[in-house]
Length: 148
Ligand SMILES: [Zn+2]
Image (tube, rainbow, N blue to C red; front, side):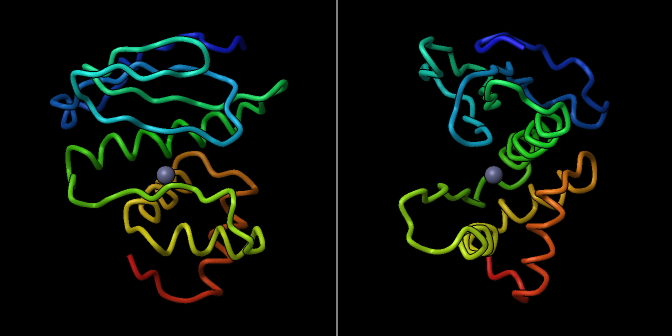
């Protein structure tokens, strides 16, 4: 798969037809991906600008992306898009790559600090689980209740 390739989402369930379908952009990111909500601006992904009139999902790909990881990332970011229309008051959190916590502590903190992130993880586990997302969920279960 090439960076900056483009995918249309036209498979939306009938009851979600009111959702503006965001374009999906594949780019070399050093993290999984992101969703930007619809607005009148543009966003820079990789080396290209994309309009945000329908929002945008970016999926990070590295040199040899695993199709399971791409599916899982798409599921996660799509859920954030769905959340934007369902519960826009729930804020997502930024991944803190500078944190000195262990990777496991960072994962637990990230998913416990936002109900939206926890919900997106549960959705990705339901439709496109990976070994990583299963591991993250196991750490969360062991860490106790989600605060949100
Ligand atoms: Zn997320």
